[in-house]
Image 1: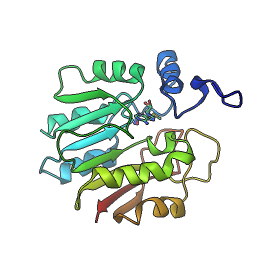
Image 2: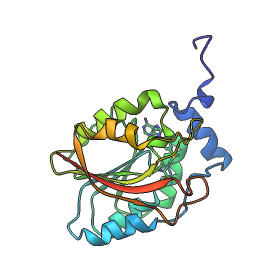
Image 3: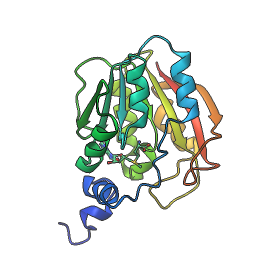
Image 4: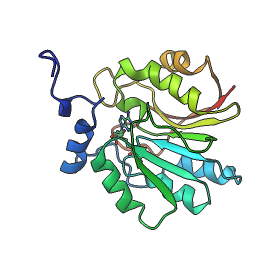
Amino acid sequence: MDSNEKPSHQRPEHPDFWCKRFQAGQTPWDAGCVPEDFARFVAAHPQPRTTLIPGCGNGWEAATLAAHGWPVTALDFSPAAVEQARQVLAGQAVDVVCADFFTWQPTQPLALIYERAFLCALPRKLWPDWGHRVAELLPAGGLLAGYFFVSPQLKGPPFGITDEQLDTLLLPHFQRLEDRPVTDSIPVFAGHERWQVWQRR
Ligand SMILES: C[S@@+](CC[C@H](N)C(=O)[O-])C[C@H]1O[C@@H](n2cnc3c(N)ncnc32)[C@H](O)[C@@H]1O
């Protein structure tokens, strides 16, 4: 370990950070249910889309997608998160994968990446990589849909993003189709969460 570097369980770019919190039951970001805008989005898109949920945590939304017949991969690099997701999603047709979003390779083309509390969990130095990666994983017409923590909050996670920062990450490859405030946020995100849908050009 670099002498200037914090231990792994204090660095959110490391699985140990998240494992420690899942193992301690300290998961204030976890809604424990399927949020409303997401449920509306699925209902409005009857044609199943092959979906990736990066940084899935417990992966509640994956069960909804599977129930609608959508092929879905719920991915997380924390073994503790994956263990919990496998319990939550037991018996569901969901591919639960323990892997790093930045290196994982899909086995079939994706049509949707669902975002919730993943981008805001990443240290800001990783945001440009995130922008490149979502663009790389989605073909033209593919959708990036979900929840964005648009907030001036500097210290995180959750790390707040500004509208300008999000535009810088996504506008080179995507056009924004939807953007609205969220009404059923849990306390950590309340007042700063937006539902957005972006389409890959
Ligand atoms: C704040 S939690 C959100 C979990 C879930 N999306 C939710 O809404 O409850 C962030 C999750 O991202 C995962 N994560 C962070 N960096 C990752 C990476 N590079 N690859 C895969 N998962 C990652 C963490 O392990 C953690 O489970």
